[in-house]
Image (cartoon, rainbow, N blue to C red; front, side, top):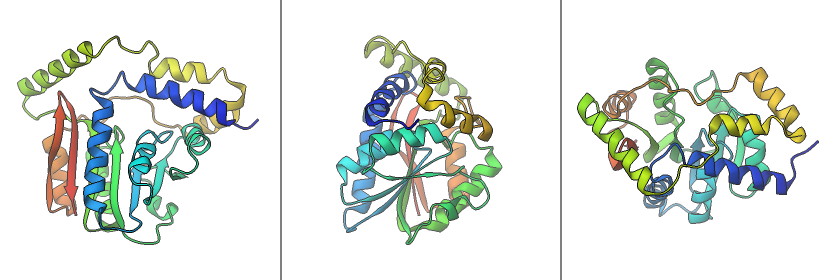
Length: 252
């Protein structure tokens, strides 16, 4: 059974709601990322943008709405999330299945020119530091000079007290924004397993051992910056933060 447009729309909407549990000012963070991409690619007739760890295309859809002339490649390892994205927003991006950091993963994307911007949200906190350094080097190699890597994630300050304060500020902000969505990551996936149309995609997902919502490598924002500079990015820094939710920009 295939995934219909109506089914994909319903489940992408549920995905959006449950993801609000995990990011302070999630929509503002998306907006900031799009601001950076628009500024960097403003003179490009058809900028090439990679969305790393795209899921069902949450960020790609927003960038495509802002930059309809851009060519977006949405990259994820999860077959169900990719199919939801392809069906729900077929014109937003070219959705490609690839495991970021695997051998030859960039070849799978079939890029035909240098990349203007690579973006990511809550995906680059999974790889171990040594592998993350290689991923950053690989991205630096495909980005054009002046191109950017824009990463929105939970990237705490390196100092323990400040990290604790940042987390507290974020929790307080989330509390002021209203009640936390009832459905979380685990509940979303548990419900998805009850949908007959998803059975084949979920079986494929299980076979590939797709990543879960684990805590990841625990690197601070400073450690990410150090790895990015070592990988060849010439300017690296934060452009937005609320609590431990951060947008980090690295210029090639």
